Length: 336
Length: 286
Figure 1 (tube, chains in turn cyan, purple):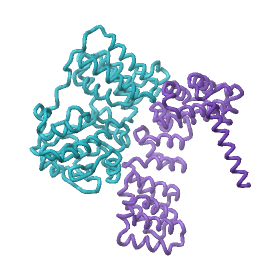
Figure 2 (cartoon, rainbow over the protein chains, first blue to last red):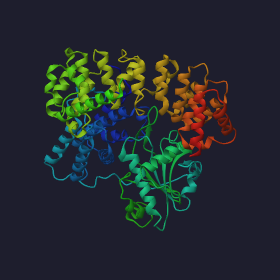
Figure 3 (cartoon, rainbow over the protein chains, first blue to last red):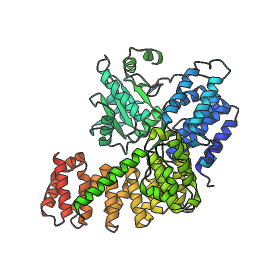
Figure 4 (cartoon, rainbow over the protein chains, first blue to last red):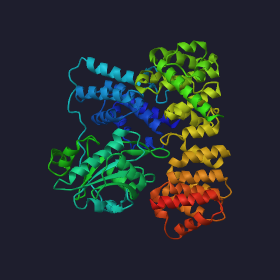
């Protein structure tokens, strides 16, 4: 057996899972920007996330980990990750049981036709040791939740909504974006008039519920926003700038119903990517060639240089989101 | 061969194939390799056929042709995803179990299928094989090719190394795989413009560069096409690759370069270069 970087990561996960406050330190490992993810293949990322999720069965979830688990259960196509989540469900102590049951059922449907045997005994467990399939793990989690003697899981375990933060004007001025037609913009120019809804994506993303859905949402909002009193910009920025040349941005937008226009751009960063990444704490990491893991990420960057990460990733009704970001909705009053 | 006889032969083959399909039967070559008991296998009956075929495939005593035939029959069954869904995990597991089979033909067939599935276990084996952390499980060029299927997969640094230092076949596969890797742009530029490299490698490098780094590709095309002393087939490949992008050919078809391509399209002694120049001009006019 060849020792790999994953084995070292597995040992660290095991160590954290044994600690008294293990759930909190394990949750840190779910942040896609964690250095452990750097350089891994997408398959290795799945191994790591699955293994971490499974440990919450022992430690119990934190509210933050639970929020991430819900996102992942709602969007992952990886049988391994979903099996890890299914095993971790035993550590649930928050959220509506119906929500979790719905997410588990949806995950089963999503991997129907791509199921596989998975072992999570160790982070590097080989398939020869796999006794159950991901679907069987999801079914077991469903049964456990349905049969649990405890009453409805405690509600309102949502992680605290993300707080607005202030943007550095120098960072904004130093961030240069190239759009699908080769036009060059500075980020501060794009938010100057009415702010901008910024979504992150990359054209090589394999998960239709992430980047394709983000771009589709941006496109729908951009069509609705012109009817609002506050016509903010909608801008997609690629995580994979070196690869996502204008031609690819254009094709990706066209393929996903994105109607390009003066307030609707898909872009890649030409300058200032690292500063932007640091400033808004992107949840993304990279393997040998391209992105290996990322969250679905949308931000509203306001003209007064405040910004907020939208708490539900890309899972919004476009009309509701447009109203809220135009300053008339509940989200705006609560969060901004 | 008499064309009419050939037509009749094809029609008969199609009719036979349709009849077999209706009956859920095996293609004749597969049935022959599986042996006489294959007559009872109905590919539309998943509950019956899957266990039989998986067992035959896993049976090391069945012989290579029979095992490969079983694999082929299983391939056919994957084409009905909803019927196959309930058996997929077992099929995948059977492939993984055979990834280190003693028989290289079985290993290769299995790893090809797993690589197409972007299977992380198979990718790990292939990477370890290339990194010489285990005995080679398939020929090096094949391993590079299979790892190249997945840009999200492992082994990218070893593929970059192979593009510089492998045998010619390995280098060609590695250069193909680098088409998805913008960080390999400088390497691809060097290989494409280095006249001491084989023409085949230079052509592949040029085409891969178009995917990996379109900006640098444009510069390389200008350099290659503008060098009358360079090999005409290399120049023709570069120009043809540019012609496949209307945007690129439009942006390039200006000034001196447009004049050069016009002259090539008329004067070049190379038919392939001349044809590429015409293709380029046509694309630029669209």
